[in-house]
Image (cartoon, rainbow, N blue to C red; front, side, top):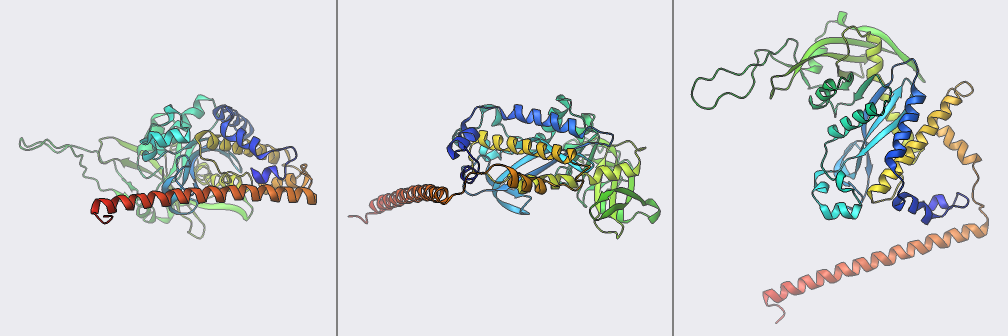
Length: 420
């Protein structure tokens, strides 16, 4: 915000901070409006999907709301940071986020003092898994009347049956990626409980005479005739043509008796690389071209995060409190709607217009604060003043820590008799 105030005429860093952190405007109302704007923009003849995905934000320290050592997909490793679960509407090559939930690890929900300092509302402190947050996004989208034809997600949400079972029970069509070692059954496993012999505990573990197989092995064993070629969409590198195989299989959680019949959808590039495997409850009559289109639409979620972080400042924030984090995300989502509308309006004149292009145009044509020598020196003095205060604050904190350590050592020495 300090950098923003140095560029934007009439702005002030403190006012901007007040607007983000302490102002009482309702981020949920803004996000609700964003979701309706996006749904209206994407409503056309092509199928529209609601894709669930999460994004991580690397952070230092322990005070930022929700921060913890956890998996950060952007870094590809476990590190200190925050994680948000997002819902993104996609329609062919157009996309924009419509909802978000900040993931709170259990240790946060169990620490009242920490929650109080971060300003987390009392009704938001109950622990929710990412799957529960994802389902909440889907339910809220339907409640708001948003238009989408299916729900998609990556293998992080497809590693078990909890997510897809819930979507199935909600009446949602889904296309969810799975890991290569996900177990599927070619025939109905027909689970049964072994007959009790009258001694010991009654059997409670379900058994089956059918053997499951890893999804990747099932796919690799398919005959060439089971594959067909489909055209998915045009890309900047030419037309996307894929090979697709669609098989009817069964899935079963061995702790339960319930068995579900789904489609196993596998697509790969023509050079037989880039294999993707998904589960779907779409109708068996669904054309293969549509299934391939649905599966490969998850690509645009990564593009959405890329645009949001590179051009819309999604990861460029320094705030600790609950309200500030959600205010920031709501503003970023508003910006993404603006990008979506501009690209749509300029489609005929500039069909390749990107978010980066729009950002460049804004930088060039929006009014900027006068960069006279006096203004530059004034900004320099302000930065040095804030830097000096930060150094002094750090020095005081270090000195207090040093004094605590000295007192603690002195008490230990007194107890052990080393101080006479």
